[in-house]
Length: 173
Length: 173
Image 1 (cartoon, rainbow over the protein chains, first blue to last red):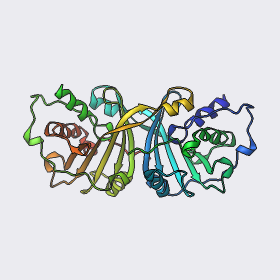
Image 2: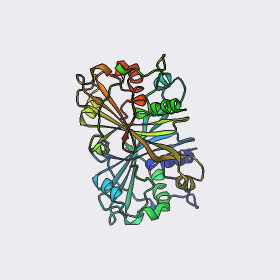
Image 3: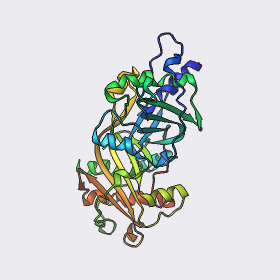
Image 4: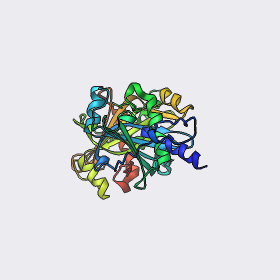
């Protein structure tokens, strides 16, 4: 059950567009599980919008994906890889039906963010995080960082998006 | 059919949280249909995030709701009514299944913004727009403003949210 929870949380990653592939051994890999030591970047809630996302099913998540100035510039210029210093933030909420909106619409169709569920970050430093494709991954729930088992899931999944420098989320114009 | 289109587009309003109530007469009301004369505010794509939204059904819309600094400040301070100069922008996209994400997930669950469908704005000026609750409403599709019939639908619907100064979208923390 604990493992399932990891899977589900792992699925609720950046922009809701990150998946998870269980290591064949089922063991954590110390090599692939660095302690990124990332703290919540100050001011991230003021960053510009990259995109939005929604995951159905057990996740039932709503995401707003924001980027610092380096991230936004790289996205807009279509430049890959992202430069060192890039930070991408994914703010996750529940995906909940809005009773007050549905009342106005006269039918059940409106979904809005529920309570925040977690905040996730990708931080680019091609030297410091060389072993994980140049990225650190971070996950915070109620201000507390994700544990090692959860953090082990980030890189193997993101590494599937090598062609896009490990970033799944595309820019919404 | 044309009328239905208006209804649907009208429903795809600010943050996907605006509904529509057809005038009993079925006629447009010149008094309630001012020519707001609003142009697309420069730099709106750089504004801060207010929230995200999704409408199911025919709309099938994904929205990112952004605000200028006055809007964000008022939201964060919980102050109503919004001050003159407030602008709220709702960027609408199709709500589309992401094949590339689903491939990673191994199942169909991921939704991302499709093509942009329209951009909508609410602009507060309590004197200039006194007849419509202090707000101008604007709608742009491919850069072209919404026609009179469409614009007639904005105020009657938003006026249902009088207790929140005609704004449906709540701030996502």
